[in-house]
Length: 377
Image (cartoon, helix red, strand yellow):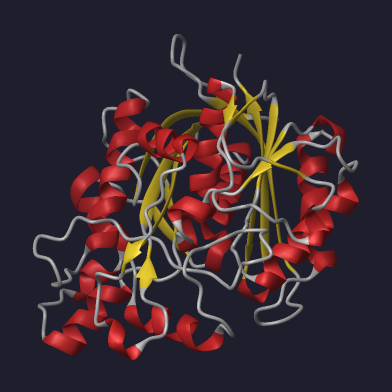
């Protein structure tokens, strides 16, 4: 069974629409810049992939994650030709930090805080009339977990249309925690390169409209064949090859495909040595060396956009199927040994006819997800 993706919206450090983001990826443009959100003197890392939309330089603002969420959902609905009234449409939002930065600003600076605004459902109800909203906090796999729930709702007959989204803004507590637990200080996020030193955070929001079947004459961007999810609980931070292998095999089974059918893999590619070597090792065992699908990692230019990162990769995969182009992994000059047999796109965008795409998202605690997309021809 497949579901139709009929509308998309996204904003990130490198663009304010899915098309702008994809064009930036293909051109090798990065959103990396000096940290703007807060004082860097307390931290080793000084850079991030932020959206530069604050009204005053050096002054942070509350509610940014919610603002982007509303923009992404609104654009996805308009793109789908939907009237914008979500009274009968479930909205599923994946996030890691929710509106944590708003609470930080209240605590640190006394910025006014309406506690109702900490829950995305409030803004979605006020803006779109949404009455069924759900938040998923499944770390880096949150938005693909939300996507899996969307397929379940449709298959169970609970909904014909579902909006799936993800959003996160930079938070100081999360940034500071990451700064302290990583052994090295990354200057940039460099997935699968021997020079990788760790993850740097990014910002953004993304949304898709998924339907059981498109309306007559409605544009279909791609068809969602399946989403696999699991939680192996192997370790608080270290990924487990067996858990990742299981979720990929489950996604293939649900989608009715095999590894030989995959034309493109949107890698999780977090830039941390353990994650990169584990993901590369698993994929090297699954795909035939040198003859498998093309692979890329968008975090090399967007940073790690946390809860929405999986869905952002999925939207970029949709555009790759439609344009026949795969963006490169920025900064990948010397791949890790585990990736030796993988067809990583390097240096410049590659042309390819893509029928089936795989999207990976792996989070702390062994929270794993993988989605399988089919091009709409």
